[in-house]
Length: 216
Image: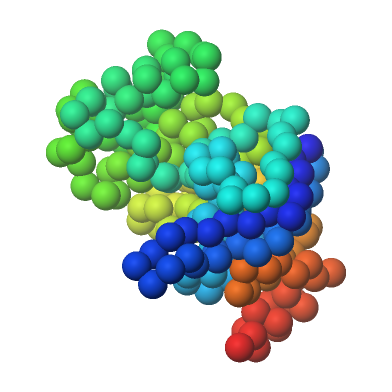
């Protein structure tokens, strides 16, 4: 289980303190799939980074008894001077797992070919996203964090990602944040809308979408 208790997150800007999340509470149970809707700038990516542990809340507490992925397709932690293969080895060391039995999978899934052995600074944004998704799938987690990930690549690669995530790992917990999310919502059983720093839960996706569409 992952539990967020009264989470507040503030950032300092030139105009002063900006509160992005203000008293957010959320419980993620094993195998549960949650959709969080929010407009651009609502704090969805901040929420995902906090759950992953990439950032710490300003106040409140997050407890985790499940292993949690980094945000899928997020490549911000990669080292540009290292090759894709070296980044794979580095991330596997961080998570305490072997890299050698994952090389073939990452190479095949990412479809990077010879570029897997080239520095990341030579990659396009799409290549980096494909590598990040492949690495996320190569290391098994109890809970996957998904930040608009289904926009990765073309329609064929999109379908490949959907199958790998929602079919092969259908028994895992997932937190999906989106400003659209129509397709992803079919995989979910709990629905939230994030607006002005607060999260509101809804009994079904239609109610959540209606509120999201009509929010001021």
